[in-house]
Length: 122
Image (cartoon, one colour):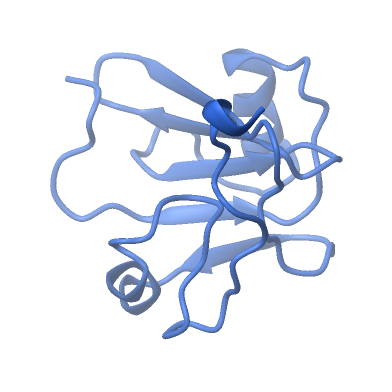
């Protein structure tokens, strides 16, 4: 199954990565740059330089899973670029659980960037 079961740890790479990398390349980044085991069941979040794309890498017990998302009319909100990794806590996850990636919520301090893309207005 692709969806991780049980408690999920999420680690966010703070520096943008080369988005031409696939599963094996991102697993190498997790292992070498972040000092983490990409086969441990942790969800690793990587961002592109322009902050309009994100890739999630996880091990589901049978193989690596790579999920990619590209925003068409806006960008994700990211913390200041620095070395290392940011660990998302369960408190952050619970507060933002009803908020889709890239939007934002008032309770955790992140802010909305732009309105959702509506093809009917274009």
